Figure 1 (tube, rainbow, N blue to C red):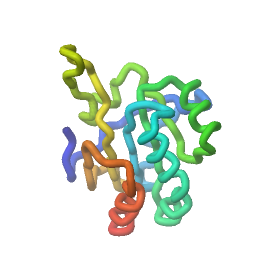
Figure 2 (cartoon, rainbow, N blue to C red):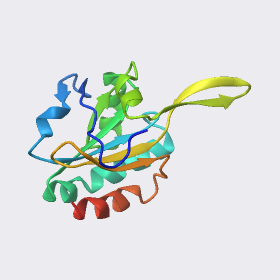
Figure 3 (tube, rainbow, N blue to C red):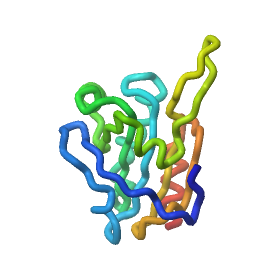
Length: 154
């Protein structure tokens, strides 16, 4: 797990349009909110992504980019974005490498089997690439508003 004060792990991932996004491109320019979510199209993930999209302009006014990451592929992200009118950039981490770097992958017991799951988590990273807040196992309802209050303090 990551903690406040640690450098944010760097990465390059494809987005819903299959264009590569290099996280380092924000350094020195913008703060970032990275929200990791389990699956495109599920009720809570949809609620969270819509909430961040609805408030994206407010985040932008405070010099902050909002980026969603899950293990779904680029095509699933494109469908999810288009179906729900999402404006936030969605990145695909199919092999889970970035999820592991951020400590959001955990085994959970389900029907007697251990299953690797992505824990809904959000990271607020300042423009210098330092983790300012690491929020694990978050509730999606009202989460974007809570994160926005933390962004205003940067």
